[in-house]
Image (cartoon, rainbow, N blue to C red; front, side, top):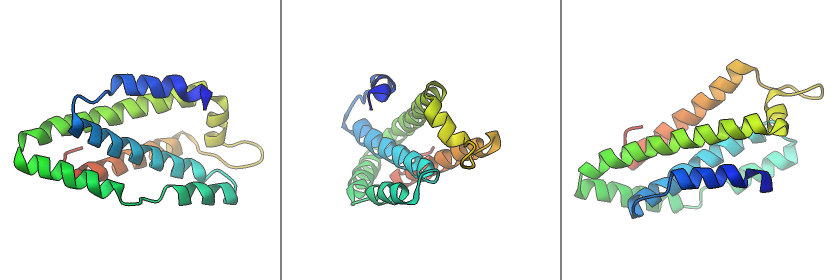
Amino acid sequence: MEPFVVPFDAFHVRTAPADWLEGLVKAYVGDGLAADFYREIATFLDADTRTIIIESLSDSGQSAFVVDRVRKAIAAEPRIGGRLALWGRRLMGEALSQAQRVAADRDALTALLTGGVDRPGMDLAAIGRLFTRLTENHAERMEALGLAA
């Protein structure tokens, strides 16, 4: 994981939450984005590795806690919703920026996505669709929180 320390640290520096609610949204959005990305990447791995990854990503109920707390906070003070919606969009933008940097810097990740002699990969259109799926999943998570993506 050493090669990924700098991008993860950069993400966390740029997205330090200002309060508890922002922290909850960051955990929920960040975990969801990471899980989506891992699921996408898993499709390019051998069956055993893919199974381990998919099984490890199952939601064990923590997201319900976050959704409940954020929705209750918005119901109590509706103005919070606008601020948290902006925060969620910022998190998504930073995550996509860091993911693109990592992919550009890591030839092995790029090769995994684009394929090679021994296996098919994704062309630019497919990579664009991957980012569209990530964005659509983010919008669904934001909607679950009661926020506009």
